Structures are given as structure tokens and as C-alpha cells.
Length: 200
Length: 200
DNA sequence: TCCAAAACAGGGTGACTGTCCTGTTTGGAT
DNA sequence: ATCCAAACAGGACAGTCACCCTGTTTTGGA
View 1 (cartoon, helix red, strand yellow):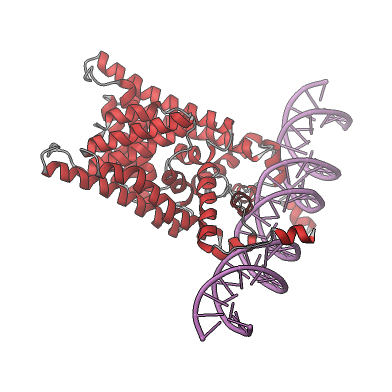
View 2 (spheres, helix red, strand yellow; view 1 turned 60 degrees about the vertical axis):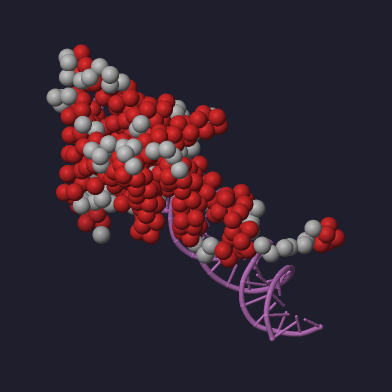
């Protein structure tokens, strides 16, 4: 007992790695079960981390939530939305393309877990001002990136000048968020496909 | 003490009224704080009901959730969406009108608490199959009502035949749901106004 | 009037939750 | 080699949660 424990008792401190393991588990759990429905015990088990370590890196559950929003959700929006749209041939092609790409990805994995931003936004934006501010900022950046792309298109003659960039951006973000909500509730990506056509 | 208590100790059984009081409190609390963040104690206090009475009408918390979805949320969608759209001059005017009406109402009360259906859909559709089925059905009925109105418009020459009724309906529901999410996170109805224009 | 069933009161219970505390171990600076 | 702050372990803690149980009151029909 002593020998066995001593044999594998080699602890290697890796604060950043441990922190990321916690955020990995939290990002996934908050997505699937939600923030309130996820206990710190769940996170400890999923991440393979003790209570002491968890409390050392995140003094409160709220701190974990904020870290997930600011470090993970923001990054997810950047990677799956802002990046592809900016580098697309046009705003409309970029937006429609993301709709289709996400629909395809969801069909491939056969399960719709919803939009990370939207999921947390619904549960937390009224619960705490800090949560709300962090979530609203991501929505705003997302919209701004699309509107900026539309303006670039207009400047280079790829988009009708009658299109209001802010209106198109608002529509794109709103439609995507709502379509993901519906896809999550119905577990069917048909709505995403229909909206992909409409946003072209 | 005995006399005072005896004096106001007249209990009048009103099972349906008590049930509705619980649902009133639950509908409001689930909307503002969410399902998981609302305890049965919160509901007992808000509704002025004892634990025994609560348990008599709703054996589990899930039963309260299902009743709120099936009796209250479905009715809310019917009243604020399906009714107005059906009796509007056209589907587009009806849809755009509801966007504007809701935006106006929210600006009047100065606070955005989100769409009842969407709020519960996000928190509960992955948590339990029964919840998910109930929520998906409301989404489906909502969509079907709008699509049907578009078809009527087309039959009577008020709408271009190139418009796909199902696509327009999906867009309307998705855009509204998403715009409400954004309005809730930003506490700003600007997105709703922009989408109202776009859905005309 | 009587009585059974429904409606309600109110407290108890075990499980769980988020937080914190006290020790022990690690790693880098000296 | 030594030392100290950071990193981590593991459990204690008070509070809360959903659910259930027992007893009392009300109600409507016989």
C-alpha cells in the first residue's frame, strides 16, 4: 500500500495544463448540461482534478464560468464565424457558408448541442451583470465583424449599396442563434439549411 | 394566539386556483432566473403555497416544468405570435408587426427578459426527452402557422410565388428567437428593430 | 348527518452543493 | 543544499435542495 502509492505518487506541477483541463471539462459540461446543472464535483471528476486544485485556480464557480466565456466561447465564435466570414469571397457567401458548414458538421456527429454562446447567454445573462457584459461583448464583436465585411464588399462593388450592413449583420447573427436553438430543440438541422439559403 | 389564529384560520379549498397560482409563479421565475436556478422554496414563497399543497398538485419539479411549457408557454406563443400573424393583412406584415410590437413592449418596460419558449428550450431541451418533445412541438406549431399564412397569401396573390413558405417561416421563427437572445444579452431592442425591417 | 376522498399544512430527511481550511508536495531562486 | 511561495491533496462545513411523510381540514355525495 505504501509502496504502491509511493510508486505512482510522483506529482508533477503543471498549473496551466491543469487549468486548461478544468476549462475543457467545464466548456463541455456547460454546453451539454448547462451551468447550473453542472456541479463542481462533476467538473472535478471529468477533469480528474481534486477540490483543492480546483479551488486554487478558480476560487468560485463564477470564475470558471467567466473563464469559459472569455477564453473558450469567444475563441469558438472567432474560429467558426469571424475567421471564415472575413476570409470568404463575400459577406453573404461567408455567412451562408458557415450555416452550411455547421449544419454539415452537426449532421456528421448526429447530435445538436446548440451554440455555445447562445446556450450560456440564455442561462447567465440575467443571472449576473458580469456574465451579461462578457456575453454581450462577444455578440457585439461578432456582429461588428460581419457588418465590416459587408462594408468592404460594398466598397469593392460586390454588394448592393442599398443593403444596410448593420441590418444584415444583425440578421445573420440573430438567424443563426435562433436556428441553432430550434435545431437543438428539434434535433434536426433542416432549419439551418433553410436559413443558409435565405442568407445568400 | 389561539383566537387570532382561529379567526383567520378559515381555509377555502380552491385546487384549480392554487394550481394556477403556482404556475403563475413558476412561469415568471423560470423566465427570470431559469428552471434550475429556481427552487421549490422560491415557488412556495412566491405563490404563497405550502410544501404539502405544492406536492399534492405537482409530485415533482419536472411536472411543474412540463405544465409551464404545455399550458403557459404554448399559450404565450399562440397569443403573441400565431394569433396576430393569422389575423394580419399578410404574413410579412404580421411577422414584422409582431417584431415591432414586442420591441415596443420591451422598451416600455425597460427590461428584456427574453422569449419564454427560447429560454426554457435552451435550458431543458437537452436535459430531458419529455421536455425536448414538448418544446419542439411548440416550435413546430409556430412555424407551421406562419408557413400556412404565406401559402394563403400566395393563393390570394399577396405574396410572390417564388417565396418558399417553409423557408420564410423558418427564418421568421429563427430570427425572432435569435434576436430576443441578443436583446436579452445586450438589454437593447435595437436588433429587434433591425430584424423587423428585414422580415418585411 | 355522516363519511370517504380530496385538499392542504408543516416539518423531516438524506443527498448534494459551493466554499473553505489545514496539511503536504513541488519547483525555482538563492 | 536550503528555503519559500506556489501548486496540489483531501476532507470538513454549513446551507440548500427536491422529495416524502404524517396529520388535519375541507368538500361533496349518500
